[in-house]
Amino acid sequence: MRLALWLLALFGVAVSVALGLSQQYGTVTLFVPPYRVDLSLNLVVIGLVLGFVLLYLALRGVFSVFDLPAQARRWRAQQRERVAQTALLSAMVLWMTGRYTRSRKAALQALGQVESLLTVAAPENLPSLGLMRSLLHLLAAESAHALRDHPAREQHFQQVLAHHDSGRVDQKLELRDAAYLNAVRWALHDRDNATAQQYLGLLPHGTARRTLALRLRLKADRLGQNHLPALDTARLLAKHGAFSAAPALSLVRGLAIACLDDCHDSGQLQASWQLLLPEERQQVDVAMHAAQRLLTLEGEPTLALKWLLPVWQELTRMPETGSALQRQRLVKVLARAMDAMAPESEWLARVEQARLANPRSMELQYLSGMVCLRHGLWGKAQQMLEQVAPRITDKELQRQAWRALAELAEQKGDNAQALACWKLSAKV
Image (tube, rainbow, N blue to C red; front, top):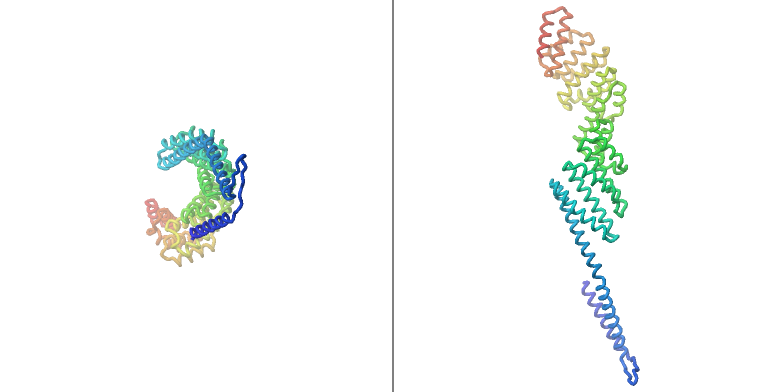
């Protein structure tokens, strides 16, 4: 369709020119004494047009001849730039395949080409060449780091920070941030937490919120045993979907437990507990570890039971949600807390209700026996513990059950039974 329209337009122009020239009856007379030359006006117009075209082409040809040296210089510069770009790509491929020595050699060769180009390049080509030079220095620094050549790595890194040939401000900032992020990664690989934290502090706020920067910050905080800042970073990464659900939950749980382990008294532990999110405090392992840590630091047993109450309700309502180890650990912590406080009828009722709802649970029968023992219900306690002691699988709970039975036998004056229970406790 387009070709047809062009043909129609061409035919229209040809017809218009033919009609216009056929209607010209004027003449142009040239007097060259003693001669007189009469020319058609159409011929004069056509001659002037042809003369202008010929003059224009002649001038273009002359200018092209004078421009040949500049064209030759541009062509040579383009060829050298192509060689540098090829060396850059080769260095990247070699670095990704683990051939670090060859990668650094290719990067240094490309740097030599770029440095020579920068001295003769046109101003409009300087930004792209400056960017290429910075990338080559970063690549050479990466290869030097892999080869454990720290002086060369630092030299190339400083060259990246010193070069500001890029014409665009955003490219300068991105190159600087890329250099800092790589420096953080190198420092973490060298187990140098101080240097990693230093370069992390130099990152702008926007760059520091990126997923890559947050991952590096998390590694640095964990390396420096800064568990509370690491927990905040892990929460932010989990919120942005940097981890899948299960690893994120495991990471946050581990950091929360580490924060609790850093506490040296009950007041500090309570403050750290308040810093945890509600969903973190409801995790079984976190709540049990906090309660156990509070009892170890001689804190209030009632507070430990308060922290364990949501976990207790969850595990007794749906026992299948927790593992056997979690149930055994919960029973140990509860028994320890109740042993350290005055008898409380409310927890006696809770334990008895849970035991009746789960009659096959050896852990609940053990806990019921120990609570009854604490409340002075010795007959019921002896009955529960005699059923549990031979059958419970956890060695520590079994040992405690035999010891409790031995103490009950001693109270009743049955020394033979007490001696037998002590022997069974020692054999566990």
